[in-house]
Amino acid sequence: MKPFTLVVITSLVLLFIVPPAIANDFGWTKDFDIQAQNNPLGFKASLAKRFNLRYFQVNSIVNNSDSPSDAYILLSLAEMSQKPTSFVVEKYTLYKDKGWGYLALSLGIKLVSEEYRALKNDHDLYGSIKDAKAINSSYDRTMLIMLIKTTAP
Image (cartoon, rainbow, N blue to C red; front, side):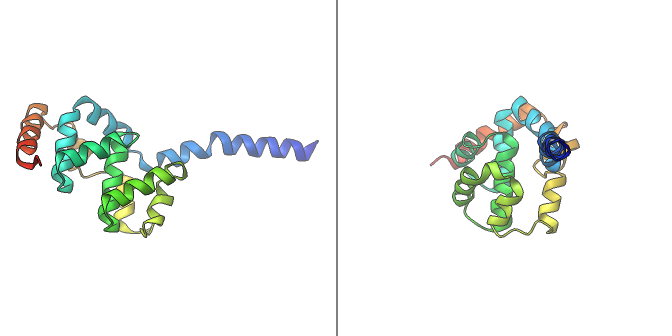
């Protein structure tokens, strides 16, 4: 009976402790998602500006991501790996169940690199998480309108 008990205890530990530990790798994503959902137009405008993309490209990436933070991480990984965004989105679709580390490795990004470790710790979309709360949503809407007018195909 002892081997069975050991297997059950080990299974419970793996089931309840490991997934939350993995999810906390990018601890900033919860606040980031709340901020982005409160101001989706400003978020998309900020993504377009930060990654030098057109609005329709950003819109497509956000719509094909599970969350706003996923869209940001995808674009950051594309930038780090110097791979086309469409290629990274395809990999994300294939490997999203395996985690960000797996995706990063598949793109040739070392998990111990300064860039990847910095991404795990914070984002730079608004400068930092603290700065995100200070962004004026009316300014973001104005920027989005200007962005759409200047980058429309």
